[in-house]
Structures are given as structure tokens and as C-alpha cells.
Image (cartoon, rainbow, N blue to C red):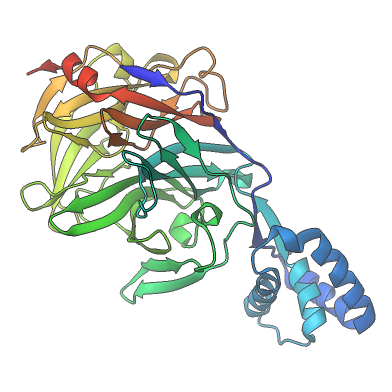
Length: 419
């Protein structure tokens, strides 16, 4: 039933983005600017050349970043601009720092079919993988990989690209809701370069565990996923929505059914309404229905911990997967010693509020090699998709690396105890 592929996706500490560096007080900022003012233009040009040789190849639109950071510092401290262009760039460099997005961990992947399926051999599919990248200060952001699965199941991952694209256009989406915004990435960039980094105050502690799904039903097609927005103390659930992975809309979910985290949208409507799996109360899995993608008032109980392997808590491993026998919902269970394993339940095809099949135990547990890592004894996933007779299922291994597993659909369906 289970085939573990010899693929390991590890963190890469060379993936850096330029962030604003704020020295912290007016006197330090003023001292930096004053010193730069005293330098000759010739000296500043020499310094700028040295800095550019060191950092420009590492960053997309290097000079624009320096101008932006200098302008932000002036705005923060309400200072006038007294520098010419070369000196302005030097000051901007002093107010910039590099942030290694994967220096702590790269984990919790999800996979969906790519919007562009052109130029492939018969039976092959191009895919997008999202991952949670965590860096200094344990701040998480969203990063992407792409690849192709051949008809024979062979997976080809595309190489990471540099420089990363962090500078982009934000637009507030709704004047009534400051937490709704859009992102547009430049047309000359590649998806593998794009980084979605916390923008809102509610996200400043990280954007965690994006659960992507390809929604395609009755002429309505989009890619979306919920993620956990963390402000350093509390969390809220937000939705990411896109048609092309270049333009993104992001907003918080609302409604009394939006509790806890780890929500996963169904890839189709159920009886004319959107449906979502969620964990509520810390332990139970519930199902939610709504006419709206962003507002959820209604939920009902679906499943709860019922065995030693999931006694502490359970949650979904991404969106339910359609089969003609029902919806396969992969779940994680937490047991003794905070060991995360992966199991599954089968939901009724027409009424997924009904659990129609269960398993005796987990189908995936950490191997001796997989259990060691930043957070030991953990297998975790934010979702995969069906390809021919397999579920293509990316799995994070103890928050240290990720792999890809095939789950045979006919064999899994046969293993369910039907109720």
C-alpha cells in the first residue's frame, strides 16, 4: 500500500531575502546618515561598488530594495531626505539585513497539480509543492517547488532558483478589512523564486502550514489553501487564493465555526456548498459547510481520538481526496511521547458528514531514520493529490526534511472497515 520514494527535500541556508534593518532609535539612525553625509561622492561610489559586489547577485532588484528600505527608515523616524542617490543607496544598505528563510527548518509540504500542464508526455502531471520555511526567530513563510510526475511514477523535481523574489506589490483588498490584501509577483520571475513572507501584524510571527487544494467544480476553478497566521501570541486562520500562482489574494476566515486551526477545503462543492475539514477544541475533527469561501458559521462533529496512536489529538493531512468509493481523508494522530503517525478515514461520497470507513491503525509511522530531527518522532503533511492509482503524498520528517510517498488507492480502499 505504501511506497516511500528515495527523495529528500532538505533546508537550504543559502536561500536569503533582504529585510529592513531598523537600528532601533533615532540617534543611531541619525549618526549613520550624518556619517554618510560627510563622505565624498567618490568614496561613497567606491563603498557602493564593494557592497554591490558582495550582495547584488543575491537579491532581485537590488537597488530598488535599498531605496525602499531607506525610505521606510525616513518614514519611521519622520526624517527628511538629505542624501543624493549614491549616498542614499549606501544608507539603504546600512538599513538592510539578509534573512535566511530556511535556516531553522523546511517542512509541512502540500502538493497540487500545476495550472500549466502544457508540453507533457501522456499520463504525466506537472505539480506545485508548497513548504513551510522557518528561519531566524522561528518566523515561518511560504515557499514553492515544482516538478513533474511521469506516467510511470518517476518524479523529477526542478532545481531551486536564485535570487529569491521577496519584493512585490501589496494592495489592501478591502477598506473595511485591513487584513485582506493581494500580492502580485513580477512576470519575469519563476514560481521557485517566489517567497510569501508575513506582511500583516497578525502574521508577524509566521505563516504556517499552508494546505493547498486544486478546486475544480462545475466551471469554477482555482487554487486555494488555509494557513495559520501567528502574531507571536495568538493565531488566526487565513485563506490564500490564486488562479495562476502569480497573483494572490489573502484574507482571514470569519464566522463562529472558524476555531482552532488546520483547516482543509474540499476540491469540489458538496450539494452546492463549499465544504471544509477542521479541528476544533484541540482534538476533534469537524466538517464545515458554507456558501462563502471566507465565512463559516456551521460545523458538525466528524471524528475524535479513539485509539492509542491518536489519543492526544488528531487532525487532517490536507484536503479530502475524491474516489468513486468515497472521500479519502488522510489524518495525523498524536500518541505517547508526542509521536505523530498518519492514518486515514473514508467519508461518504455524497454526504461526507458520515464516516463510512475506518482503519485499525496508522498506515505511516516514522522509520528509525525519519524519527530523528528538529522535532523528533513526527510525520506530518498538509496534503497531496490523486495521480492514476496513487495518492502522491508529501511528508515532513521530524521537521527536518521532507519526502514523497505513494499511497495505493485501491489497496487503501480495500483496507477500510466499512460501517
